[in-house]
Figure (cartoon, rainbow, N blue to C red):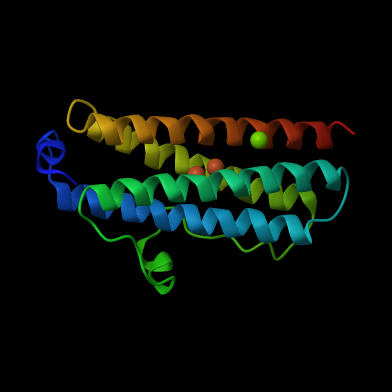
Length: 161
Ligand code: FE
Ligand code: FE
Ligand code: MG
């Protein structure tokens, strides 16, 4: 990043890059969990679930893109090897080994709840310290809150049938 732009960052840049890379690992694992979940999910209201899972997968990939753009602006290197995803992730990965729709949705709800925690911590940490990263983090946080809400609404609809 330009030197003037970088001078706006009032926190440890290396530490910030490390945290953004950890979030990047979460996004890729979340992307895959949604993407592969949409392929295998079975049961009541399967089509609604597939649609929601695919939408969220696309959002997670977009989040990965936003994080990488900021990481490189800050002079960092994004995770280059997928092997590092498991070491760096905050939220881990839950393989959808049981394809029952409620099981898959509940795994993803847990993922979103973890993501909400991660991004609210990042938002707190960057507030008044790095306004650009702060805005990016808030934008992602807003999506994760919506994701959790959508999934829980779908779970309730299915349970009510
Ligand atoms: Fe995300
Ligand atoms: Fe999400
Ligand atoms: Mg949605």
